[in-house]
Length: 257
Picture (cartoon, rainbow, N blue to C red):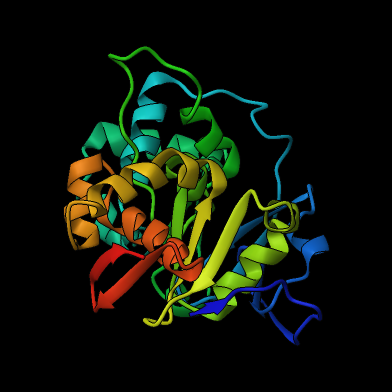
């Protein structure tokens, strides 16, 4: 495994103007990623769409039907939020609600990269934050976030990125989290990058060691025992293996060191 490090330089960035904003591809510098006046949407092909924010986050609220529709859209994987396909699943009332959300810029149709022709629905930061506001247990709906999103890392404690460019962009976007040790990332033999929060490691490390004390197990088996998703459990195991605290004796099977 190769420990992931921070990027020392900035690679060439290619830019193209689209109907919604500027489409960038390449390695984005930290100053751009942390700018408060723009909103950055990561597209599936590794490029980014930059748009100007319509105002401060959370300046406006969402009505009940709007919250429910935003939550519904968030349960759909980003690359599957093609407007024509999504609209077929919506009722007339939901379509009217969606029109209102688009007028508020809470939901936008992005065009760029593989989505240039058909577009893809994107949820603004303000709308995402609005549906994350505290709610009663009866109102709470679990939002399925992509495991490659920083939101998933923040909520679940782990994240898996598919390629080096995505890992570098994350490190550039959140340098303090990486430098401080709050978040650690490594590249595994499958060429994916596994990130974990230190608090997530501390919470589950002893449980995993106890499980392995009873014999070799897979991430799926351990995860079922300790109540952690298999990929999250695998992320911890890979970091423990990197530190020499567990052994991957054969592909997918782990044991105590």
